[in-house]
Image (cartoon, rainbow, N blue to C red):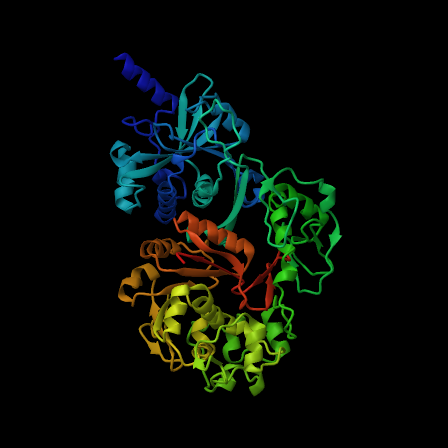
Length: 632
């Protein structure tokens, strides 16, 4: 054999025989995994393609090790994460993909300057992107029969587990179903997270060409496909670089600060036996999910956000996951006072919505029926309507809800123009509403839309000031379809100038309502369209602005196509989330889709004042709590 070819062949063998022309070398195929189904394989290939499009190999080399944590250790067999350390390979040439190791120590032993070193009796999971023409016939047959999504032009992931024996030979096996589930979570999370790595220009040695990155840790919520969910739709995935990072607060914390530098947490004793002084309803232990009430529960003494039933659960949760999130939770808890709207005199906590609505005398009445689960059997937009604005507002007194009448004496220099609002105090004052009425909870949606159009979107504001029409695409409507009487308030706020056409598009629009148009006021009309936005957009009038309220960007797989469309059109788009941690996840999703965040995360002055908590934390969330924008 030619010496050059022999050296090339030996190099490919050093990379476990997966080089071009050799194929994966193992003959493994996902269809041979015990318990696998085609519905499981498809989202795995889709997640692989999404990662491939982000091109991590432009920046990352094998020396950049990442820590991986998916959920809790107790979620996995043996109470241990399968492959908690990973690296990307192929950035310097050769096959591109990533390897996952049983431990950080294994990763360090097997990481050479450019390639992976064989170490006897150490197992690693490999995901490499192969050309279809170079793959084994069994894999090609699977790809064609299932019409799986390609990565790039003509590449597909090949997944197997490799092990070097004591004699130096290589052995391969198919991954297990549990290992594939772990890989799926990593694929989804790392594609969102790795673009956020910041280069440390002062770090690293002068003699190395390896880019040095700032220490980094991010947690994102990943939605399991239905075939993987098993009753739990979301899983928290934490990615750290280098492995073992933990959240730590800034030394000079401000109200808006979030953790940016990372170090080992304080002594564990700091976190034990802090009783919760709370009048709130029951919570669930963050470790075992047992229900506990406020008087019996314990919470972390540092962040005071996470709730437990016993100190044993508290210690175990700290070791397994909470130590990496504690600093972030503390920073969020410090903002609670800033976010609470103290002007209102009605109860502003609704952890048990039925009881809250009953205390106000509006449970199972009018538009309030969408504020609890009692009418969840009735499709959105199809709540029975008795008629009349009084009934729509649940029988509140006439002075307690906005009437279907214009605002009086709202002229600027003697000329009528849209009313610009700064927050709830100004709105309640203009409408002469008592601060004891809870209508802000429902009005949060239409007034958030109005705030975006008149305060955040410059183009829309200018069109309205000129008396022209603004077309707004409203993505993912649900309860809003039953709150049309509240959306009529937008027409009154326009104060005789301009018009708004709201096109609500989403899969929850009932078939019987799709294609219908409602003139909810003389200046506002609403069109309802059933379907996924990226599939329906070509049939809709071109928008001036796009809005998605409480969008949960990281939870729904069909957001990918919508974000691609928003990116290609360049239309200004605004998203709201209920909490800061959801906003952090949303930022990662948007950046991962290649969208530039031009309006940073800010508290929404028209968020609902009604506060909710996660069942296992004291972290507050507010409907439409925070707003961020792209392409603005």
